[in-house]
Image (tube, rainbow, N blue to C red; front, top):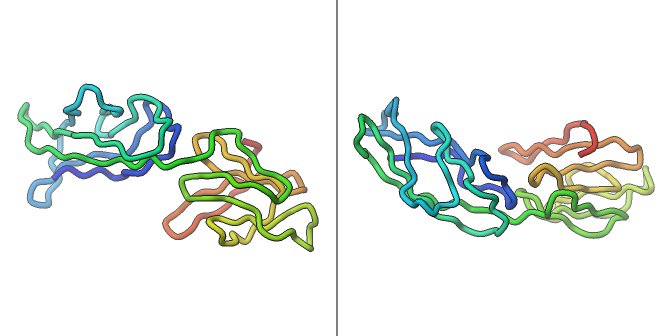
Length: 174
């Protein structure tokens, strides 16, 4: 069995970007030293070491299929077809301000909610309609679908997704 660690990537992912790690197993045991090949020469993907990588910029969201062979000792020992989900994101540099608009990231749709009474000029930041607990005046998509916001104080924060929801870390302007 060939396994791929990640099968969802954001739209506009550039050529050479790793999609996920490949591994091959027989009877539940990882086969060390195996290499991987893509069967379709016209594929949108390539192999980079033990990883599946993007072969060319994927600007159209949707599902992309790729067929991978695992090779050990010069013999194909397994074949698997993976469907890669390229999710729609707003192009880098897309911003919303003034409590209006929406932008897309791999996590979903980002919008503003109600204006903050504690800090007028900031609005509640919503992900898929649910408050994130933060307020800001600008939300921006940058660096391949990453989400940033700043409030009227001028401090920038970046959203870092995790398995539960995500966290905001203080950073520099995108």
